[in-house]
Length: 241
Image (cartoon, rainbow, N blue to C red; front, side, top):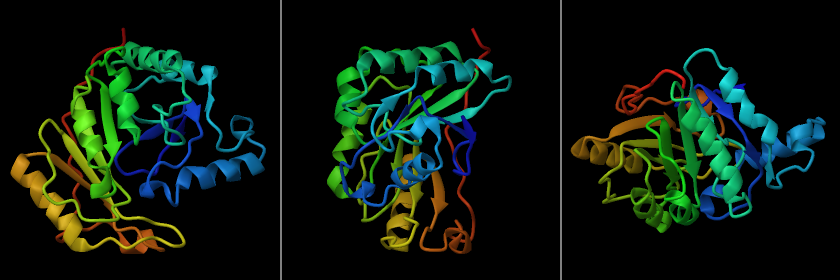
């Protein structure tokens, strides 16, 4: 568990770590770089670097949080990676089911596995399920997400590396957009962002603009049309069971 600087969440929880690249959005993966850094620091959880690992001890952590949290699940991995056993995914879902006082945000690029497993998972109200959509080559992930049992569905268009015209936002509750950062970030055209924002307005979908990115993401900021966009789906929380 760690407090997060990611604008659309409060903290991160990593019951699995590690991943590998599946599309162009993965090219400059921040988690891979961070995992190597943590391994070099001798952090036990990352002793195997960016190889897929499950962490049974991490499953207990959400039960210890005293106040309601908004939690990004697996910022350092992909819960629906083919090497994460379904049995372990079910354990992660059990933790989320048991803690309805928290919102758990799960994000994947492997929407095919998500849909394959969906009927075997319990989708409580507090599990927000998203897919990464960095350009139009991977918009099929949206259709697969739409077929899942998640009650709140969202898109993370970050890093946005191409235009996304005519998005099918039926059944989608939230869209996050952000530019790539790092040493060699690929540019994001402002027109791509404005187009997505306008699509969200037309379809009454919550829109969150995370950052322009670039080599100096703090300097470039996150203003769009002279304002910040921090819209999120309505959060419904219940008491712990």
